[in-house]
Length: 212
Image (cartoon, rainbow, N blue to C red; front, side, top):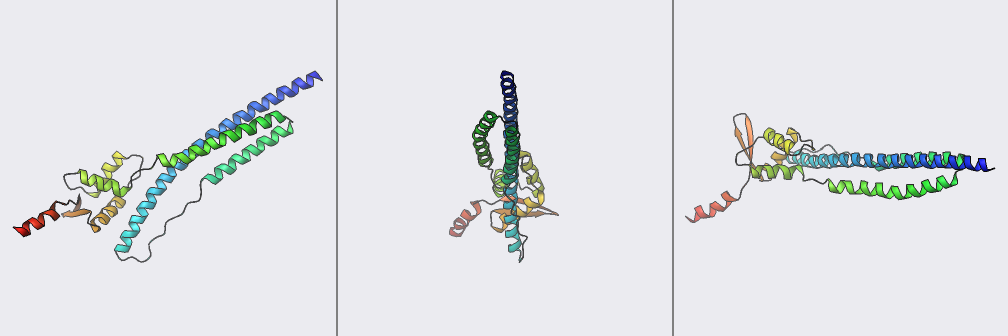
């Protein structure tokens, strides 16, 4: 009878170690997926903003049926269901060997680790918020003393923000939108088009000239 107890104790310890290892691996996998989701959400927000700018340009040019944006599905559901499936399988294996203590310990650890993984996933998108492409382009133009082309602006912004995907076509469309709103000037030199930021100096000089 004592040998059976020893064998049961050893088996229980083995299952406890296995379940603990599975839980740690599961938690790390959730953190990795949460990080990937954060990066994808950032790219999605940038694309949605660019889509809004393009829609405004399309309507300003007389378009009537702009392409609608794509609404993504919630990315957190597959990861949670996968985690629940793995945990249910582990629980069945533990019950089959009758190690009740291992099941209780694994359940407690799972309950303590799940909130931590969810908190990290919830905090990630907030820390990665970045200025919009319009703000980046306007700030770049204001910092330049000479006119810049769309290609030059794209190169500068890509070097300053390597984590973002910035295309010349989107930059040119955004610049034209700024010109339409009198937030930038367009200068054509030969076959090339250059842009500069608008300033308030010319507007203030007109009353003085009129008074003279």
